[in-house]
Structures are given as structure tokens and as C-alpha cells.
Length: 319
Image (cartoon, rainbow, N blue to C red; front, side, top):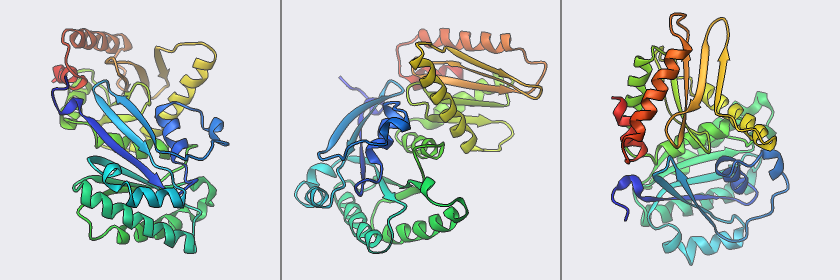
């Protein structure tokens, strides 16, 4: 029997116009599908429901809602009490190339979605992804994003739900990982405990930076930077690179357990930490030896195996 909030099934709606990239997006993130294999993906004609286990104890009930106008209208009217009940997070996608009447029409649908969400799941969180930004000239991206961001925020006013953030994304780079890392972080319970545990471990290892990744998706769960640069996009870029590297290794039937990178300025070590996470440790102090870091990791893993609790319970042992 599920006992606590850490084991709750959390409902996530993935919505937006047809061909905005909803199905491709969740396949890249949660099914580890290479983006190049999704170029000719078919149109979603029914609600696609998948359950994703994240960090072992968090279960995400992801509903991919078809975006064809006729079907979407039915879900917004005839089945709204089923679709919008008990929603934790809504992820709404816009196709950045949609302009003029098409964009205005999508705004009407967006407001209807927020209205239903406000009625059946008040207090839920909303993330908006303006997708396929790779199709916009780099010199125009900032202007296009700011214009659409302003319109989206205006349309979201008046509902008792919060638009947590708006992202410019595409499936080919780290922008996708930045968006989805923040989305799943908002679903995780006890985030303060996770952060403080990493901070403690970073101090014990005399590291400059520590990053915790979810094992399957390689989304960033949390990070600590003693220099407080807070360059989250850097970690998402690393996440994307490592995931693509591991996919290449998997195709060659090679299983990677640890990655070590050394330069004249820093040393990076990436390896399995808990059963459902990988950890990245970066240090610049020449007095810190990789063997000492490895000892600390192995010692922490022994602590983790000593209890049968959740991932958060295990990380709490580092405090």
C-alpha cells in the first residue's frame, strides 16, 4: 500500500496544438529515444497515457492529449471532468511558427484549458513550452520569445493557478532538458532535504560543484555550486551530452558505469550514486585526490544500502 506523499501518483497533462511536438518530447525525455528517430512520428489520435517512475518513489501519470481541433474540443467539453481532475502539473506546448489567426486561435484553446484546470484542479502548476525554436533565426529568437511570452502571461491572468515558467525549447539541444528538469523538480517532495544533502556531500568531498541526475532520463534533480554561479544551462548541456553518449554506447552494447574527465584546470567524475541517480562531482583543488572522492562515494553507497527507505530517506543520511 502506498503510505505517503513520496509514493503518490502525480498527474501531468501534456497539451497543445497538433504537431507542436508533444509526443516527440516525452519520448526523448522518458523513453530515451534519439531525436533523429522521431522526425516522421505519427499523429496522436487518442489520449496516450504512460506512467513514469522517477527516482524510484515518484510515479508520474503522464497524459498526452491529442491536439487535433475536433478531438481537443471534445476533451475540453465532454470529458473535462475526467481529464482535468486531480492534475498536479500542466505542460502546454505552442509551436513557435504559428502566427496570426492560428496563434490567436490557440490562445482561445489555451484559456479554455486554464479555465478547466482552474475549476477541477485549483492550485495546480503550469509550464508553457514554446517549441521548435530551432526553426527561428538565432538573431530573432529573443524578440520572438519576448513577444509570445508577454501574450501568454496576459492570457493566463484571472485564473487561480500559477504559470511557473515559460521556456523556449527544441528537441535537439539542452533547452528541452532545462525545461523538463524544472518541471519534474516541482513534482519532487522534500526538495530542501535533497539540496541540503548534496550541499553537505559537496563540503565533505571538498568539491566545487555537485550535480545529481536522475538515472534514466538524466534530468537534473538538483545541484550545488560553492561559487554560486548558478549556471543551470551548463548542467543541462552536460545532461544532454552524457545521455547521447550513453545512447551511442548502448547501441554498441557497451555499458558505461563511470566517466572521468581531467584537464589542467579541473577534474570531473560521474558515476552511479543511489539506485536511481548518478552524481557529478567537479573539483579544482590539486590537493583533492580522485581516490578520496571515490572512497566517499562508496562509503555513501554503503549507507544507502543500510536502509529500505525512499531516495530522499537515503540522501538524508548525508546530512
